[in-house]
Amino acid sequence: MEISATLIWQGIINGLALGWIYVLMALGLTLIFGIMHIMQFAHGEIYMIGAYSVYYLTVSFGLPLIAATLLAMLIMALTGLALERFLFRRLKGQVLSAIVATTGLTLIIQSGAVVLFGLYERSLPLLATGPLHLLGSAIPKDRLIAVAVAVLLSLSLYVFLKKTKYGQAMVASAQSPEGAILQGIGPDQMAALAMVIGCALAAAGGTLAGSLFALSPFMGLAPLVKGLIIIVLGGMGSLIGAFLAGMILGLIDGLVPILFGHAWAAIGPLLLVILVLILKPEGLFGHEE
Image (cartoon, rainbow, N blue to C red; front, side):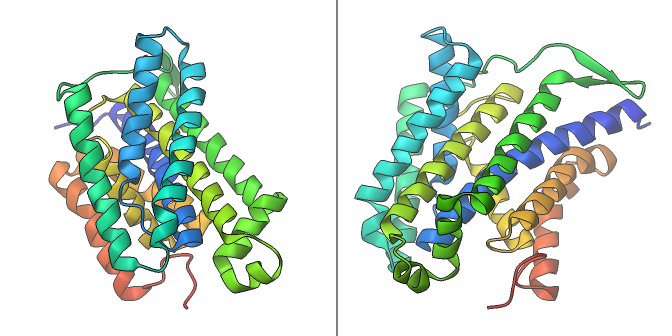
């Protein structure tokens, strides 16, 4: 089969869009784990519920997509706050209990979503319509907007963590919890803030994915797995590593099916993770403990 330049361009743009959506998921997981030392396996369901919230806000209440997305991010942020206060705060230091609780929460939310939303797929309004002609190829505008939105959110988080008082407090709490407490930084407040930001980013990622592809009760599984892979590849706690690993995974998903077939696209990230774990277990930009 002849592979045209247009097909390659579309694969690159699709890969970048997917990669940045994966980054939004990975950033939330990294924040939550870094502050709370809990791997939030139900994070994919936050992503899914956020997307469905936007669907019903746009379809049932007629809100514009932007307003619905911001409201869904707020709803998921408050959901994250409640989860931290009434569930995760009680699981600090209990690794096995946290794994069981988050896995159980995943199954509960998935089952509830099947009952409430059904198994048939739905679609969100498009981010934009029509193609953009770039270097002789037609690129869908919605993919470019998805990339721009995800990049903006990721950079906003980067600036927040590096330049603001609360962001630096979160970094300090993740790097040295005991030292942060001695400086008057409350661990519970930082954990709540991590859940709020992580869940809001997941809702935004779910909205972007739902607009580009389709909604289903099981749509959160693949981004969750990709987010975990990004954390391993990039290195725990490294934002630059998360950005780079997200782009690598996205381009694998966008280009490898075109060039080599879907089978290689499925096993490629797993082979890459195994290779990194063998050669550099702390990740590309991680640090040895």
